[in-house]
Image (cartoon, rainbow, N blue to C red; front, side, top):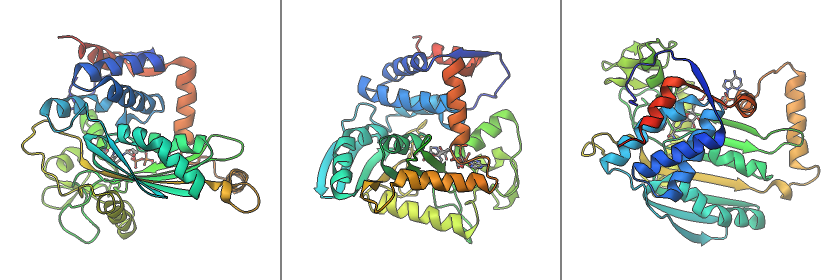
Length: 345
Ligand code: NDP
Ligand code: PYC
């Protein structure tokens, strides 16, 4: 399975969530992670595929494996958690993946959020190659509000500049609501995620206008021109650019991680995972005065529906999840065969 190979149509096959997790777990272990890290990454990646978050589902496996093979990331790292202050937890991911670092600090973070009302988790020396919503949604499922930011690799031109500096720097937010799944959004601060540009290039599709520039800084709708020496633009001009700058500050400067422009993977051919940092803020809304937060957020949803809103952020993903739970996760037969081949010697 290669990240560069063109996407060809092949028949659909359906696989259960646990079967996909099991397959991905075996692949990660075979390619150099510990079983503990494999469990976390396999669940994360299978969840993305299940929810139709294709830019961060099984499409990412070749990138994970080439990175592990390059020696750029430590797939067996054991994160080191430090209890810094009443509302502050720090984790050194020890050049491992960010998700095991979050898992290692999770219980302490939740304890602090519940006692102080708010707590912050600063992860550094970490690699995040996934969608960000899986990091926040579980907090909302247990009644907490969570916000996370992570920076990535230089490929976005700040608004008004002429060369790339920022990463694609997503922001994810999750909040509980009384009568439904949590309210969740997760968005790159670039006009399009780098993963979606790669997918468009593999499919031979053009992008909408305003997503990126070519190697000469000229606007282009050709994903290959963006990937081969070009760059992305922030979403919403100066506004997305300011948010991207904020992500660099919170995810890198505040955590002790690298800015998106500070690491150099040139000596690790095949490395794809950004070596940066991640910040999470978790709030316990039970401290809210008056009506419960979940009832207030439900009221907001009711009012949004009343003015004609049919789709909330997260709705598409949750609908796809429900469909996957009913019929199995839909994969292309060719993609499943390529995953299975990764287990062969
Ligand atoms: P999208 O633009 O597809 O979606 C962004 C958010 O908007 C989602 O919550 C989505 O909900 C919602 N949304 C989309 N369309 C609508 C609509 N018409 N009405 C209401 N809500 C809508 O995501 P991005 O391309 O910006 O990001 C894709 C993924 O890439 C994210 O998961 C992000 O975390 C990941 N990423 C990871 C990076 C990393 O360094 N690890 C870097 C950059 C991106 P829904 O999910 O239901 O469609
Ligand atoms: O899709 O922009 C992206 C991305 C960067 C790192 C992981 N995903």
